[in-house]
Length: 75
Image 1 (tube, rainbow, N blue to C red):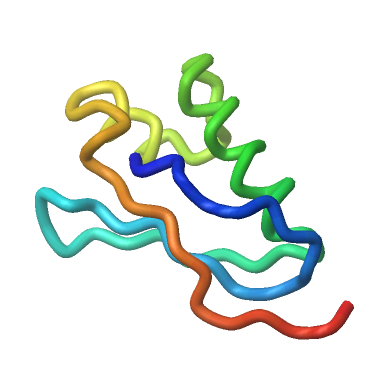
Image 2 (image 1 turned 135 degrees about the horizontal axis):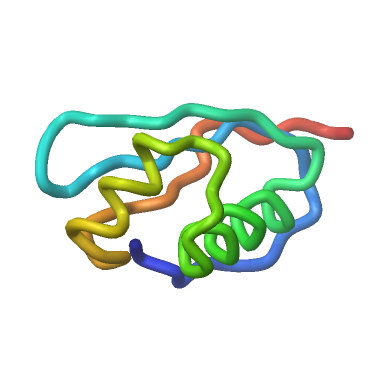
């Protein structure tokens, strides 16, 4: 997963995309920056709530994902 990015405190919709195929995970958050780091921490620890995402992460590693913001809005 490409972990670069700014820590911003805005609400919005985000996308986690596999760079190996067309799989995507779409979510929303009040604080996009915090949600990004929560995903990162859970995946690296092997305790993410989404077991399919965790399994894919375990198999292919963090560099097989891209995290991006699709839409931001005022919270």
